[in-house]
Image (tube, rainbow, N blue to C red):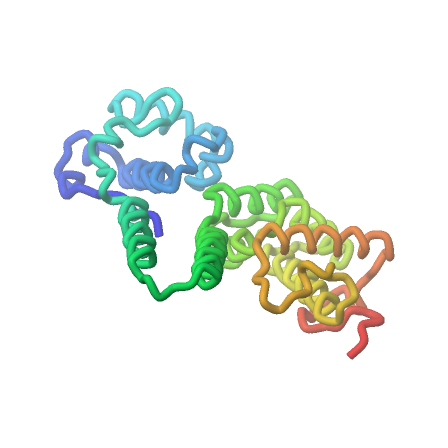
Length: 268
């Protein structure tokens, strides 16, 4: 979990405390975005959305923060590197731990060549799986939220359900397709993000059911010993949506989404 150092002087710094509580909150939000490395990738309208303010309020905020020298013209946080220590990162500790494990393996004279090769293979697979499970692009949930907002459906990038979709590798195009499906099911009605997320989850369940029945999964993905990566799941979802579009599939009830529903024609 990303974290950064917050100093006690925040409570007494005249530059900070002379601002309104709203401006102080916006400053903390910028620090959070910088901590997750999302700040450098966002445009002004995306920053405004992340701060939950209008673009006019964002312009006012930027002008104030520039005067107080909290930020640069590119929204970079001044003195960030001098106040955040490289030792705060766990990357170096993890690297040292893995190096010690490799040295211990070399000293073990009872390990056969074949066993050593298998150990290296398993270690590489574990490293890949750990990286896949823990690595979530900071902007992934924001991109899914923007896809919803572009379709006229209000959403929050901090929504745990949206973050879960991002961790599963769901693409913005999938969310856009789900928004279109939701509007088709409930024409003229106000649609919330939960309804769209339920559609995506139902599609994922249907794709998983088809895969379990051996209807769509290639041989390389059908092996029970291989854990899927986020990219695999995203590709399978894209393939499933393309087939669904070709078949012009429509849900049985436009008002109810059953995420446990079996796809038409599924055996078992």
